[in-house]
Amino acid sequence: MNVCVIGLGKLGSPLAAVLASKGHEVVGIDRNAYFVDSINAGTAPVVEPQLQDLIDQAQGRLTATHSYDEAIPNADISFIIVPTPSDESGVFTNSWVLDAVKSIGSALKRHSRYHVVNITSTVMPGSTGGPIREALETASGKTVGVDIGLCYNPEFIALGSVVRNMLHPDMLLIGQSDERAGDVLEAVYKTTTDNAPPVQRMNLINAEITKISVNSYVTTKISFANTLAELCENLPGADVAVVTEALGKDSRIGSKYLSGALGYGGPCFPRDNIAFSVLAEKLGVVADLLRATDAVNKHQIRRVVHKVREAVGEGSVAVLGLAYKPHTPVIDESQGVMIARDLALDGHRVTVFDPLAMENARHVLGYGVHYATSIEDAVRDADTVIVTTPDPSFAGLAHTLAGRTGVTIIDCWRSFPDRAEGIHLVQVGRGRAATND
Picture 1 (cartoon, one colour):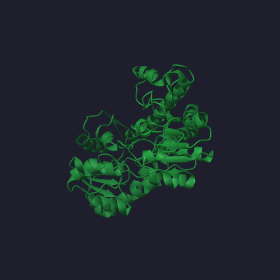
Picture 2 (cartoon, helix red, strand yellow):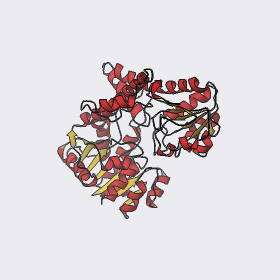
Picture 3 (cartoon, rainbow, N blue to C red):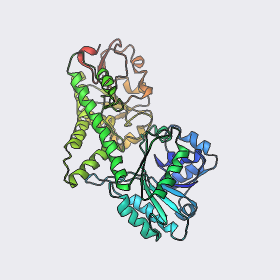
Picture 4 (cartoon, rainbow, N blue to C red):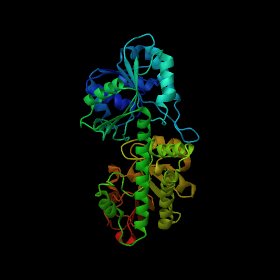
């Protein structure tokens, strides 16, 4: 099938590469010259595991351009996967999506070929069947459900595992203007997914509600686990890992996102939860649960900062982990970055390190912290080391600190052995009797 992918950033490039690697002829469209040039050169424009391998597998079936008129008329379906930034109130804005829809419509105006426009970007409920549909029909002069199709089909993925999540999704969510449009989109996915996932097809607004509900529910689960972790820390012998493993065996709960560690971050979870709460309040629905989830998440930063004060007072601190999760350079709503910032504002000498996110962190933290070139460099003079992500590169930290005495490790993900000679180990979610010096 001939496919266009509009937006070649953190999610769009992997989507285009997945489609092309599975045999589709894919043209990516983006205003960013670097993204377009990189794709045409056969080079991954963003850092994401497996992305370069898929681009290599595409074997000439993946190209990019700035021109809608060049790409759209020959395409059967287009995927719009551009940013939908939050406004001051917390709801998503559609300006980039509407720009793309209008450009697609204009390119389709002079052609009779049936085309499905698929909105992959996360939008507020009511958007796809409302202003997006109106813009598409106005720009194209065609009628959705007759001449063209319209779908809402957001991805459920996490940065650092985008390709894996696209190839092995838990489900496919398809909001459709009509059966024909949904059939075209489902046919594409039957060729790209490796695990035959269940397909949930519904109208546009139900799909929009489902997307924002999934992420908001997961954030609530994370905040519950983190509250449980703090409770365990204050009960001798308690261990949140033991408790959550048992909880996860209950089929009503499940084990995913039930770790009890640091709070959630990234470009989706925090803003989706806020957007859902704003929507609920606008509709007169009580949103206390969603607001509480956000408050608990912010509390995790203060909790770790307090642990540093307890451990060393005003000593020097190394923060390992600045990306919001391993295997990505993205620092959106990163708890590691916020912890480093708050400690520096408190007067600590803070040194930071992350395998991938150093450059992005510089833009946020500025001159308030020191930037290490390696793990060894980061911890050399530290009184306290905070491990904020379970990045595999931090696994050798105890060995790196061998021979040091009086150093405290605050292990937010319980990644290290309970015993390390000369090191005081504080593990999030474990009562003091379960922590050994």
